[in-house]
Image (cartoon, rainbow, N blue to C red; front, side):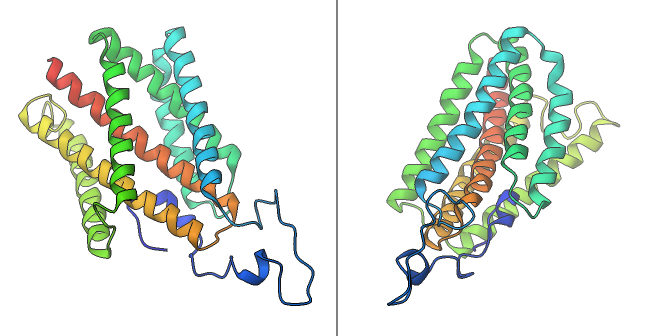
Length: 258
């Protein structure tokens, strides 16, 4: 499995691990009895339908909890939800066994976090959430088209570039956070000025290109016959990238509103 910028995909088995063979899924050796693995996610190979279904369920949970949090006005739950979501993300990433309940729990708390943050931003900048949602969907759809048409091919060089860029921006975020304890605004990466606008644009670009690696990892898993249960990891990984992209677009729009 090719390296991606998304840590969620570290748990996907290698595509050449021997999960899918003609003998196993197409009736076996001559004279043997065919195996019926329909409905058994631990045995049957992953399909695009599995990825779409699991991703749709995960995002639906996120949207529902987000909408409930926004409608109830419980914006104060955003911070604790963010902390719980971070812990769950770490557990899911390093856990060796696929756990759909954990992934759905992550989606639920991330929904609470996004619902609270979105409510706060929308109260200050009316209509900004709709713009951010449309922008996120447009970027996601655009990168999917770019990947499917082969306009940008996922190569080892591109992968290294995106992973390096991701490590760089995460490092800058941490430095900015630490600097904020000593200097107001830190390095200015989130102050709303020109530097903040440029930084958000860079983050949006990296998040967008990360989708190419996510799509490629999912494509390799499907072609390699990885068990269907691992579609939950792909759903989790795509959700993580979508959340990051949405937050960066929301920030950028707020800078322009200022």
